[in-house]
Image (cartoon, rainbow, N blue to C red; front, side, top):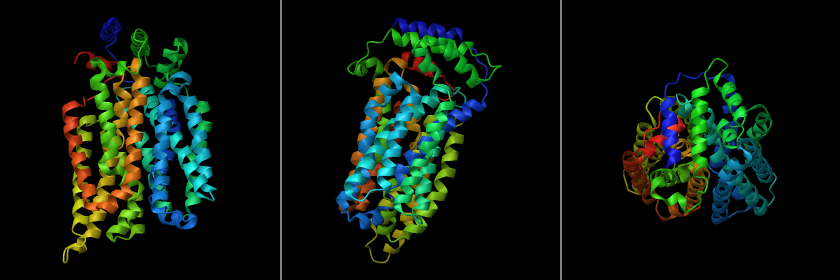
Length: 462
């Protein structure tokens, strides 16, 4: 409690703040960090258009391919277990170097695979790397950016993910699955080199007692003429408050004082994975074929639309705010799932079954667009903002594990759900999307234009 009082007092002293510059170093650092997110997106979309060719080339059954597809999310869960602790102990840059090593090794194993063992091992290694990336990237960006552009910069994580998805969707129509795996590894090589030229997070430096380096990095990120004293003071106050609560353990997370943040973090991650994205992102080509729509045309259109829609989310996140954009995205996803449920529900009905292909196309297209503008990135953005420094490691790990574990279950089970009932599958997804709107309205606060320290203070005062 004393740490919280000190933090509140310090924030009042440094409340006046000028608008920080968007410096070239800030932009370059963000680009290098989010380049790994391209690999994240490539891993998500890799199975969407390669299913038939991989199954044919390596003689896989549906169950074997479903396992292969889900291993990236299972590996992501393993990576998530260590992501926050590794970032806290060794820094964000070192953790990303390790993630790049896993991803590069995994993609090469897939590209050179001659049997199911190497294929699965490669997918699993990519998953571990992506699991590390999924926590470190949004947290690093949130910690280096000024509050007035934090949402847009953090949203660039989702933009690069969608670039990865778009590339594998598009080139999956022309290139072999082995070549696609090589393409997936290229951004990791870029990041391996680029990490040598960007700074460590100033908040991580302050937590390690390297105050002088923290101030130097902050000055470079904000510009030579910017007065960093107020922001540096906030960071130091936050670090001191976290040190006074340094005996935090996993049981401490479930105390009443952290219940709100933990509910938001875990809740949004579960809702994100269960809304239907695991199936549509990973098996879009299968859905088009099931509905009787030309899969090549469908995947090409998706590849062309997903990036522009992510740009819209990047523009809106700091104008609309997190809550309105998240609820708008969830509402659009709900309508899209209802459209897909209707499309597959009337497929075998004489006379009106002919609407199934076009309704399926509209449903998948609108789902991809609405997911890209909000639900894809906002849970990660909010997660990177709401946890105080004293619980960020444990809470971040728990939230990220929840996301990947749920994604693994959803990804592995989607093909079997389609066998059970395509229409029923999307009815369930529509209900979950509706629940997301209610959850956001009731529990998720607006964090737009607040510093990370001001966000923690808002939870203390609730």
